[in-house]
Image (cartoon, rainbow, N blue to C red; front, top):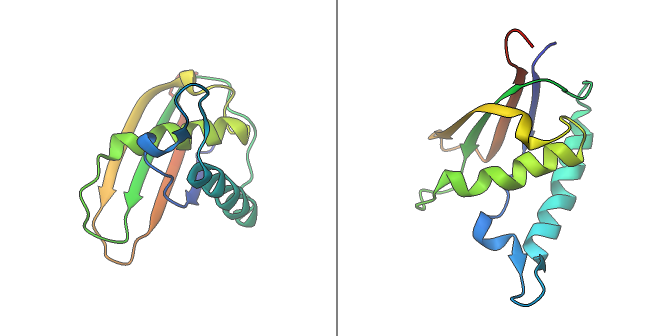
Length: 120
């Protein structure tokens, strides 16, 4: 199966995905990002069928500034989004994950590549 590739806007950090203490719910920033990501995803018209095997996920993050960020805090929203878009059935299919920061100043977004593990 060919790799799946898409570029999405950078999601809110894991710390900003949910609001509320007694009843947790998606934050406004997360809802806004989900809408934007859905529009960007649809505009790219990616051709794919849902991955069902073991996967490698590569996320390359480009940020608009040099602010300090823990790139590990951005993965969960992206993986959950890919499940919602039916790129994969569940993010537990990911056996190998590569997170990389891009330093090109004109880069702003997340380049994502999903590939099926060899032998699957």
